[in-house]
Figure 1 (cartoon, rainbow, N blue to C red):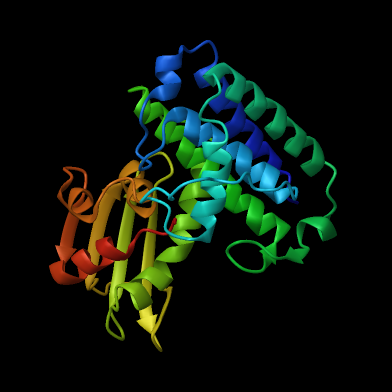
Figure 2 (cartoon, helix red, strand yellow):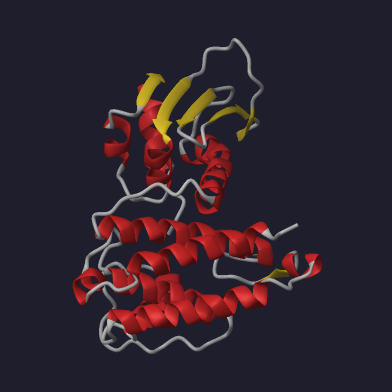
Length: 269
């Protein structure tokens, strides 16, 4: 039932390894869209997530925390990242391959009950499956961060992209009704274009954003955009203004609500 999780992780992690294989130190030193993080740091973060999940201690960070560390999760991330900044990129990549391979070996034999076991996580209690779905999104977006840092953007059209878009789509009801504070009864139609095209229709009912059936009703806001712009905004890789002003984004209806929605779309820490 949950085989798609290790499949998506294997696909994404192997693409990261393939992208960075035989690169020189300049590639690992390249700055990514993540504030303060190089390609090496992104790899170290992904290593740290897996090690932390296994109960490994967080390396101690001496000195004042960087400005981009804003919460406890950021402190954990920085511990694993800072501990590897002195290492050669090839060595960090070697550790990444070993750690992620070990994680996949542990995931493959999990039973249905083990996948659905609810445990503590930094984001609150959640099932093992939910935690690893979050891991797919994090890893896939960091793959794109690495590609952007290397000036080699690419489209996967694989499991990682599908999981990422599905997860962000699932947050839009909350974003529309709560974060953007759309008024009661307001209808949002979000057209996401590309290979993974979909139309999301949400109406505010009892202060909740709920799926709306297709109808002749004119949306309060109809927003059309390309899938890469959608996930980049949800991941905070582009700002609200760049998202709304992009040539591939079309806004029809309440422009003030469009601004509030765009401001509220970021769903990753």
